[in-house]
Amino acid sequence: MIIKDNTDMLPQVERSDFVNDFRWGCATSAYQIEGSTNVDGRGTTIWDKFCEQAGTIRDGSSGAIACDHYNRWPQDLDLARELGLNSYRFSIAWSRIFPDGRGMANNKGLDFYSRLVDGLLERGIEPWPTLYHWDLPQALQEQGGWKNRDTATAFADFAHTVSHHLGDRVQHWITHNEPWCTAFLGHYEGIHAPGEKNIGAALQVCHHVLLSHGMAISAIRSNVANAKVGIALSLHPLKSASNQQADIDATIRHDGLRNRWFLDPLYGHGYPQDILPLFGKNTPIVKTGDMAIIATATDFLGVNYYFPETIANASNEGSLSTKVVEAEHVERTDFGWEVSPEGMTDLLTRITKDYNPPEIYITENGSTYDDVVTKDGQIADQKRRSYLVRHLAELKVAMASGVPLKGYFAWSLLDNFEWAEGYTRRFGLIHVDYATQQRRLKLSGEWYRDFLCPLQFCGDNYEAERLLSLINGMDNSGLTLI
Ligand code: FCB
Image (cartoon, rainbow, N blue to C red; front, top):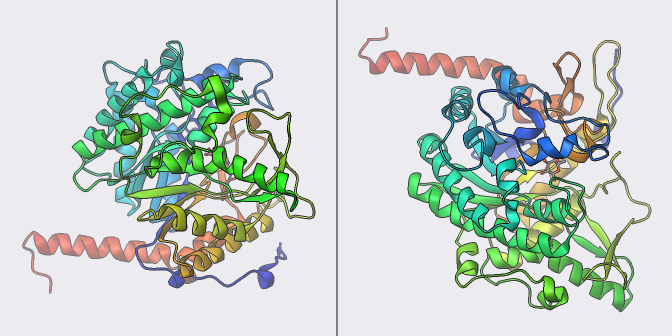
């Protein structure tokens, strides 16, 4: 079958437009792909519990099996290598290491991630672990979860143990994934675990998560010589719904919680002074010294970019009196998220101007469309490919404007468990048939592979490189090559 595509309309972008050591990766997270939630001593997490409650997950599913990556990781890493990735972002499930969140480390959990890291290195792929991608051990939740300040200390201990075990092989570390989601989707909107709806709780959680980030940086640096540590934030460029002053002011307030609430304290400016008073009695408790810990210098900023938001004034909506409105006449993914590659440049140039991070990585970017598998097993996801190509082309624009961009991680390597949306949303460059666990490279994945390995020489190169290293090895061992 010949698949017609829209290649002609896509902007030109080639790998050679970027420096040689630009990081090209895909991202995943533990709960979304691993499955095997009851094996090798893994403890229960807030997501296991959340999924058990009726009405929380759109298709009533959970991550209990997911992509069975816990068992299939060698094949999945082979696929990552075949794509030509030089980096891979994954997350470490806290409850595999500390089933109850703290105490005695579980060696089987440590061994799993140790094998994964070795597997990556053997395939020439740099490991980029994230320490917290939302799967808090349930035992800690029962002591208040992130509302409890002690959870920050437990997280720093977890960071210490993991970096102690993997730090000889892992240089890049991401402390948290999207603290906004942990705090506000989990504790204000209630659509993510643990499902609370309380602004005061959300703000306190947010503070403890940021505090734990700063504490974890020191733990990692104490174990890993030359560590590069950062955080991955979900950030959004914002547009005002109209040019009326009320909407413009609302947009500034919305930015205050969506973006500045994280960037300002991380870069040493404290919580935004124009926003803090709006929370009244819900203002988080901040102890002396906390803001200095949160502002511990990082080596890079991870930006998870998906879509811009359009903001209007709404006098009855929450403490900020703002609401997100649907922009009209814009392109959207099947999830309804606006597609705006230029928005990414706006966001990145603004971050560079206002905060000047030494390095920026796009730690997530991707799209979901309802894929159709043809009878002969192909997935012609032109729209996802177009999204990918246009965002990669936009990276060049951002870099030309002075953004210190050093890498890009596509979300995601595989279709996976998309949180409250269950398995109804597919973000992968590789399709997963959940009934059989068969993986199939989508058209978007083929494009990424061809982009990363021009003329599809990657496989051959890999063999050639392996041969070369074998020869070098023999050479080193004293054998004379004729
Ligand atoms: C991000 C999450 C990631 C995935 C994508 C689609 O907010 O970090 O786990 O769900 O959205």
